[in-house]
Length: 309
Image (tube, rainbow, N blue to C red; front, side, top):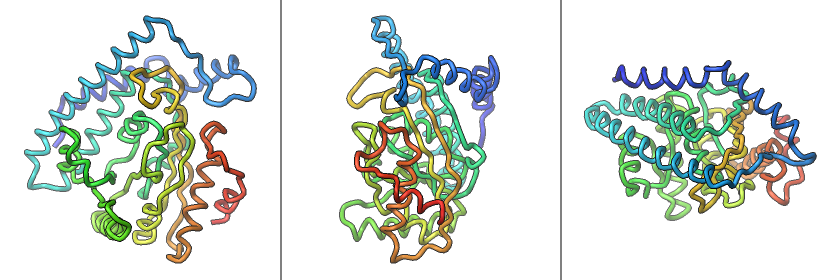
């Protein structure tokens, strides 16, 4: 059930992104200009502007984002209620909500965004993403393909409006109260993904990094891969921890990058090697992050194994 107004909204954003070339061309041009001013040996560098008017503009953008998100959430909540008898259609509308809302929020905030490896962006599989900022969620909402469900803790239902929409959209929830319940929840998620021919998006760290550095991965995404045999597609996000810092009400103009890595095949993975797979994917992830976002103890040795998997 699509609405003509949604199409017009998408067209508006499309026009804005293409107003002076394609997004990739604009992003490459911006990146090239920044590189010329970038101090040697730094990563994710940007010029922080603390002038009063830029701080005020940032606060206004956040307020507009909040109001815009509340507006689209309210609209799609009505749509979901109307579609209660059709679970798959609610799921599809949940994806449409994410694409429109995520893209709109990033457009309002105005951070330059570079997207790499987009040829892997429509692969059916298990998408994983590092998490260091609310911006990661906006980007994932926008960029994951249709037919993708999210996975979150069961308590998300108590988040005002958004939590109820999450449940109405038929996204998946897990019980993290104890390890046994968590594994059982992951197995149920895997069965649902296979049965409904879906993709999945998950933050394998299980929580938000306070510093931007990659945290250890939980085993849940590997349990799901073992059950579903779906490939794992890493989405590596950089710069979001600088753009929207922990406990800050300001979004800074830091450039952001989303990089898709080639899918990691899992159809021959074995259950007794779960820890090896977790370590291998974590090391691969860390290898492709800039140094300030890598774990402090990263040595790069495990990442070489991933190329042989």
